Length: 174
Image 1: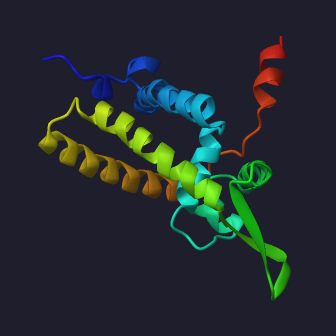
Image 2: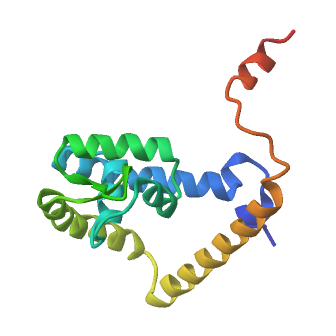
């Protein structure tokens, strides 16, 4: 009996995160082309628009947290969307340093035009699965996400902080 890639883990091509990343990258490229080519927004900007749709307004920090994204990058995305007139910022009366962001009418129209197309791409990808397989897949994703949260809590204190320069220094040593 031969092992599946998830059981084998013999090469990078077998690793779950590599395989999921490849799927996300390939499928996501279609959404990127749609967003950038059809609507002039990046995928990151689209994600913020989609998250803000239906909300009265979120603090940028809340937005970053809900999206599981870095605050600085979210702030840059918010600034770009403000410049495009797709979101608006309303300063809080009790704290002039804080502001809530929400979609403008243009942002809402963009969401309403783009979302059905993104949903169609997702539906076409998922059409490879039967209805039962899709339900099982959703359950498996939830279990994997729960396991990631457990692992994150266990490993966060012991994993080193990011240092992108370390690899270069190590490779330059004789």
